[in-house]
Length: 123
Image (cartoon, rainbow, N blue to C red; front, side, top):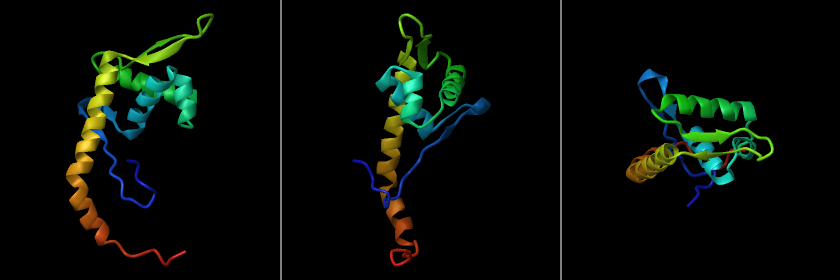
């Protein structure tokens, strides 16, 4: 179920030793690469330049023991990209952690939201 814009959202970002990090943007990029088979198409779908998308892929590939994305240059065969087994595992574990965090935090999020000032009359 997708939250509407008025619903509180929980955004999870994991920081690891050595500066490695994965958060919602990188997870969304991995999912888009999985779905489109292309780094450039994934970047376009996220309103991101190819250079930025490639930079994030390169950063993720360098942070893990094995690359998360396997890519082939364009040319006669057209190139493309796909998630490796490790990439799929990272994405799957990250999405599961997001879901568990949302579920576990529902009560606290609602309690914090109930303490917000009412802005429904403000325009």
